[in-house]
Image (cartoon, rainbow over all chains, first blue to last red; front, side, top):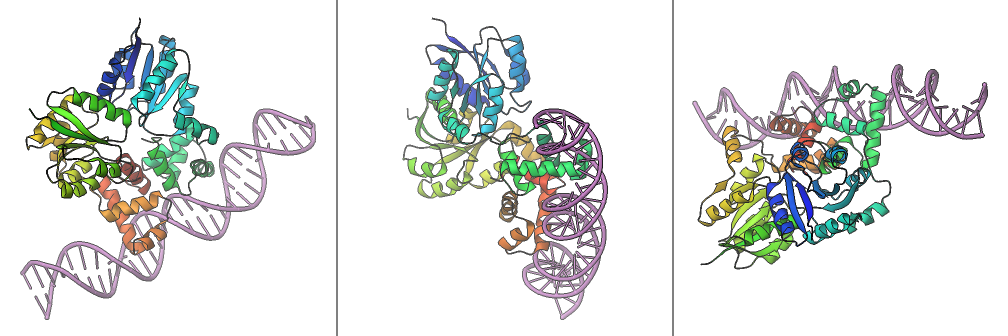
Length: 204
Length: 204
DNA sequence: ATCTTGATGAACTTTTTGATTCATCTGAAA
DNA sequence: TTTCAGATGAATCAAAAAGTTCATCAAGAT
């Protein structure tokens, strides 16, 4: 019986080691590749990989970047996203990028095993708690590229004038964007929005 | 030969399961208690626990809280702090609270094993990379209680007037504090400070 | 006692940000 | 074509925040 080939992409070494141990104890699974960053992930992938357990929110790149690249070189590979944040934003983005499974890190291994089996069979696995959230909040906050850029720049100490100039928009539009961000995140002040975004890993 | 009794306090279930597996495979170690939060940690501790692997930054409480409480009920227990952030702030705070070991989550299990053995023998283990940082930056930014309160309140959408009133200080002093925070964190704007603090887990 | 030093609060000015209104432009629909 | 909705930018005013200066007060040092 052929084992399911798993690749782990995760920068926390202990976590990766532990997960590898748990997976290798399963009869029908085996870890056949590992990586601790987006760049090494693209190098270390091999033909035995069936499913990639991918940590969203790696230091380099947003993790979903490598999905788009890998489906070009290894079209048969399927992804299961792991994330620290129990946020639906990532689920939506990930699902747009051919990710077939989604499990938060606070889940138990049992659930990761289920996800692997189900995705390998061609199905889709969404962590139960998250599915409810997705259904309840159909229009969850997803920031656009420009909106995240705005937060990034402000988080780096630029004032609004600089940000507007950098993004080639007027001060008026910038303020409209900021209000939009606050509305999306359900907060009142820009400071609150920054804190919320940082919690969700939207700004680095 | 008596095994070292380990307690795992960690809210990411998969991580905890994997770590437990790795530890139980060691000849001289065994996981004898687990918890996924500060409150359950205080309940689940037992007499077999020698060393607690403690995740800094749990949802409830700052993790170091339970150190102070446990050394009252279980004085012989020693702590090893695990953290996501490779920040020296936590190291300093933790070392003040009788924590004898410090290992970041991006370390390998090998290093956790070394830390357990060393701390069990009465020594202190500080992750190599962090030690260098500690020596190079002797006056690393450690925010006071009041300073963190200020950031917390602002991160929750309060304006300066409200924050000042809440903390029973004048607007002048508040602004002095904000400037102080920015200086400590080496940033220019309050927004930047918020982002930096959020990255280091100083605000929730 | 005197003299610092540091912290605090008040007052003031300037800068930044927030909120609102208006005119213009574009693209889609009637 | 006209019409309308949505987005943009400019201008304006109000509010908040930042920068600065000054006087006061307390704890120590001389």
